[in-house]
Image (cartoon, rainbow, N blue to C red; front, side, top):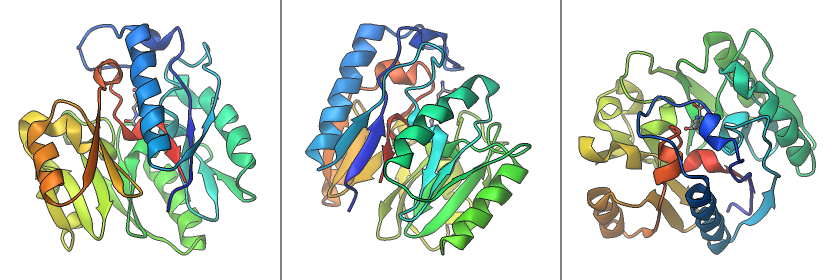
Length: 256
Ligand code: CIR
């Protein structure tokens, strides 16, 4: 069971963060409102939240998931692939130090974004992307191994339209993965049951199982219906302003 999460609301300079979406400028007020609903949803799933202050030095700082990879016994601070995001990690380290005795950190020349790391029933898929490189993946794999976890690499550098591995995959537990088509075809995910996301709904693949609920971006009825049909309790959340900044549901929190 997950019991805690770390979140950080978007800052006044949110619109200055990195993006490739071409969806226009996010509206801060709306983003704050959507973030508040997201936090309520996490609390509704039974999590108690640590809310970090927004930080104008880090316009992408609301995407806290990229700053750490968590296991029950150890928190691994990342070294984000985008240089502009590296300073985000200090506040996350401080917050995690209250809960974890064992903290590790990815070091140069390694880079890792938490959004590239997908845990699936005790195995960690590590995406190699524009943000997560080979040395970073190697360091992470060795930390995970010491914690008793297996891991494997998934190279997504040739896939169009996904920033991070988790932009196209989510684990629902019980060896069941939500997958966009380009990933569903990959042999790395054989042995898992695939819930396929149709191409018009790819953004929704980044959903999050939190205890007995699944958080899903609002506006993707086909995936929502299939999850409900499978028996999941689905909470839909408006994500329009975060999507404009290439962000999905999972990246707005670190859950543990
Ligand atoms: C970035 O480009 O780094 C941010 N604007 C969005 C990060 C989203 N993170 C994620 O999907 N894990």
